[in-house]
Length: 109
Image (cartoon, rainbow, N blue to C red):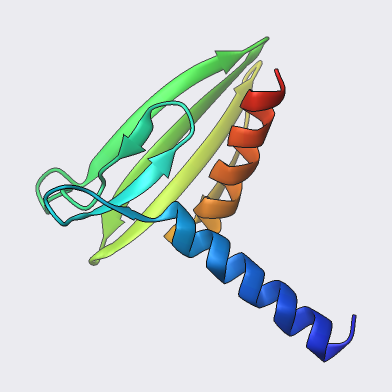
């Protein structure tokens, strides 16, 4: 892929990421969540630094966890099936692409 095309793709991805971010009525940053509508994670305080939800699809269990470590937000998605577990950690920029894809999958079904 040439540099010009790659730069254009990067700009489109940044624009989509900016569109996903929204500001609530109180002026705090709000992250969009495909299943729950909008979720405000900026209110996670030092003593309450974790948000966790799980759901099942067929025989798999998925757990989504939002955690604040050293002032940075970190998202962990874990998949479990029959005692085998796999997970991925990501920052807020990467999560936007996952949520966008999930929202498209939900619309298709």
